[in-house]
Image 1 (cartoon, rainbow, N blue to C red):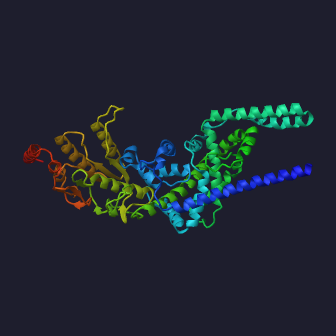
Image 2 (image 1 turned 30 degrees about the horizontal axis):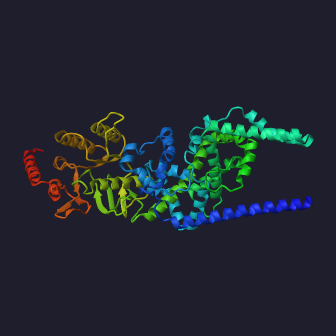
Image 3 (image 1 turned 180 degrees about the horizontal axis):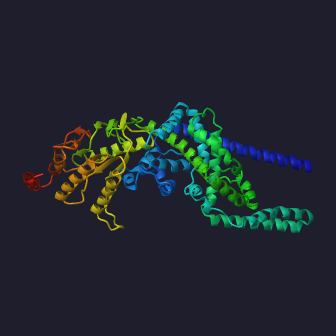
Length: 559
């Protein structure tokens, strides 16, 4: 009879193992098909057409916030430039990360303007390898998918705040973890008492586990997520044909220092990959307080090897960033790797804005400070943003939405989409002045490329033109290339000796206004605001009066 029961138990276990393995195989097959079919396509968007990842941007930006607070570096994109260039949307357009680590790292990379091409060329080597080895790229994505995404996972707190994570009373937890074993020994002598003690110790330890977990708040999820990261690192280290790639050399050097703690960590349950029977293992870990006892061991290891732990995080993030860049390039109508020059110049061919569905490409060579004129909706602002974004992507991801892009390494600064600061009590003009002041402060010490859209638009015409001319003249004398878009044609005359002029032009017909969005040399010589009143069937007396006043204003100008 006992032999029959034993056989049945063995068969039951074998059946459970078979079901679990089948489940894992099917999940792996579905993931493989998804990774293969989706590569080379833009990231998924929601019903509003916005990238899905932007819904979690407050979680994704945590690593960038810690870096800015703990390891600030020059040439980092500030909040004004980031917002002016819609960099959250640019991030969403690039992001196909399979892990939160990758998302957080990529988001920070887009903030860090490199000052030389060494890190960019190292990343490019990995990108080229991934492009030439699609099977290895898919294998890396499979490994990264095992980490998964966990909002507010708290992992970066262990990088920057390890000293604050230690648990007190570690000896108490050790004693409690032994209680179930002592109770089991009593069970052999006195079954009722032993059974009661076993049950009581399990219940007590489960309560302690949950109490500690609640006290730690984000720390326990971070421990679970760290397990996935280390398992991923193990798989990445084992990948063949990756010798000589700097990021993999770094992984193989650092990972052994954390290998001993990997098996003590609980696996995350929020990846969509949890097996139906994994809860049994989880309850065993809880009953013996394995996660609580291993927590301090983990914190000690991270504190002892903090730089290496950060290195692991960055290595995983670097691999995901390279995969994202490769995919981003494949989804663009045109792309190139930039070239860098010591000259204060920007040379571009077929430059487009990567967020537009039907972009118009432009060619040009801007070698000195320049003014960009033209009417509303003619393409000035979009072009200025495309040009600035070309520089940002060149110095962060070594990728440009153009067939050619040449620029110098510089701190990229913008002053574009100003608005009233209701909460701070600042008017539009004060906000704009503060934005321009930060540019003035930084060009004193760093080579800069500045992009300004509608300079000083928040004040009256006379003072705006005078102050704008003075400001742009001062910037011209600094180590700075400045491109400013403006409606003030007067500036093209006042700054004719120091600035080149470019413009966008439109045609007003009875059918409406037609724009070609192509950059042209020279200042704008056309006006369309009053003509548009006529096209839109405003009363004739309004149109004629506007024409009369405009003519009188032109005659009075002495600029």
